[in-house]
Image (cartoon, rainbow, N blue to C red; front, side, top):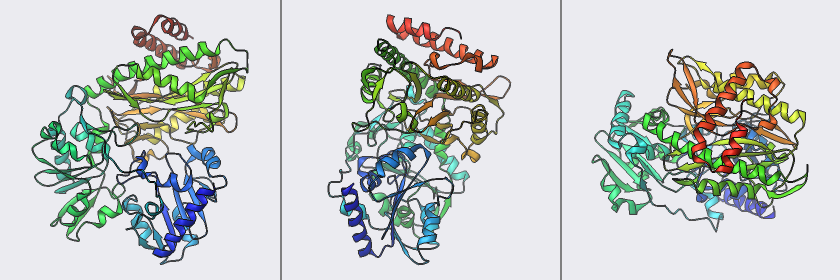
Amino acid sequence: MREIREQLSALRRCMKREGADAYLIPTTDFHGSEYVNEYFTCRKFMSGFTGSAGTLLVTRDWAGLWTDGRYFLQAEAQLNGSGIELMKEREPGVPTIEEYLMDHLTAGSCLGFDGRVVDCQAADRFAQNYRLKWDVDLVGEIWKERPPLLPQPIYEIPLTVTGETAVSKLGRLRSAVTEAGADMHLITRMEEIAWLYNLRGNDVENTPVFFSFLLMGPKGETLYVLDETFCRSEAAARLPKTTQLRPYFQIFEDLKHLDGGKILLSRSGTSYAMVQCLPQQVEVIDGEDPAERMKAIKNETEIRSTREAHRRDGAAMVQFLCWLKHAVSGYAAGEDTGLTELSAADRLLQYRKAQKGFKDLSFTTIAGYAANGAVIHYDPTPETNAKLLAEGFLLVDSGGQYEDGTTDITRTIALGPLTREMKENYTSVLKGHIALASARFPEGTFGAELDRLTRRPLQEKGLDYNHGTGHGVGHLLSVHEGPNTISLRGTGSLILAGMITSDEPGVYLAGRYGIRLENEILCRKGEDGLLEFEPLTWCPWEREAILPEMLTDKERQWLNDYHRQVRETLLPLLDRKATEWLTEQTMPI
């Protein structure tokens, strides 16, 4: 932690030179991304905290890191001795960043940040009370060994996977922009751009996107890319004739020279630095990017493709579970099995790599044994790598990027004897999962309503979980995408037919164990007009942890039907040993 303290001291010297009373370091990039290239891991560099969400605030004599409930335990451990205080978001008595600044800075004080990584909406709020110093990257000054920002090749994905041409998508988008009263549209989210053009890349680990911006004008589009070799490629020659290519950083200059007009952009998704480039004569229309919702509603080709990806991913998961169960079966209760969290995660990766069309993980595998499973977004490292004993729970949250889809699945696995409490809690989480998976609801239902429905079986037992119930999943894109979310914050998020969302309730007992059960589910319209969910993920639940007497007849029927479908879907893909194991695991309960 000495290194972190020295880096904070160096940052404070830069702050003093620039006249900044506080400096803000978020976890994102020039595009507002959740997962970022190593070049953009400034918050991690300055704090030592490795979670995927968090914001560091440094003042002249204090530093605090705000993060959500998924990371409380992890952050406490990683910040210990750093001089950085953990600020637990949404916990009683914990101020927001804005509230903290109001209490500790005076009006007119100077707040600094790199304006390319702070969204305009947030910066506008700060500007109401403070002077802003947004045009310097102070972390970049002190990070002497910062990884370079180097692009990976951009590649095409076929129409047999996407189901719609770029010309068609751009045409639909242009109509939506016109309906919004704008004649220009700025897109900064890489996922939307990749989807629009049926292109992918490898500029962000586990997310097949490429560094890019898109400026849509009245008659054509300008695509700004970091991979300049793409501009000379055959794929570039096949772009829509209305699209021209320009260098990535040229966007900042081009925006300065727009000659009037109305531009649609999201102030919450566009950086402050980028909006500051716009001339005064350009009118900003603040609104959601229409491409985000277009992308979230999958077409039949995308649905068919992702079903196939989930079949192969399910086969990999079953092979992994079969191997793991046999590997621990010869040990006495509580005995060291010779396995660890990392060795288990690596074995699962090998099974995925053996599947046709596997390209990458969709995120770093979470393999948390016993107490580590209670850390909601635990990231096993050589320092934390727990030995697997022949008892208790191993929580494995993982996913893959395939040539035809993106997967995300969580299973909580019994490695040996379980207590009655463990079984009751597991069954309660399963009941919550089934509540969402079997829900039928009218059009116009928001994610928050479905979130409450999922938590109800758990809350009746005095249980709950400190994260959302479900997030949108991209199609060979980000494993976390909007606008669909099934969570307490999803009050404005409609769940619509064609959207793919996760279903992942859980229970986490700090210092003891965690349970999470996750499938991806597709929203479809039933014959009677009500919306319902179709499971996309195929993998059995943990029979040893289920208490049948806790299930209603309806829940038991759903469980047995699901296991039957798992068996029918996966058996053709499995070897003899895995076939025998799966057949036993999916017998009616």
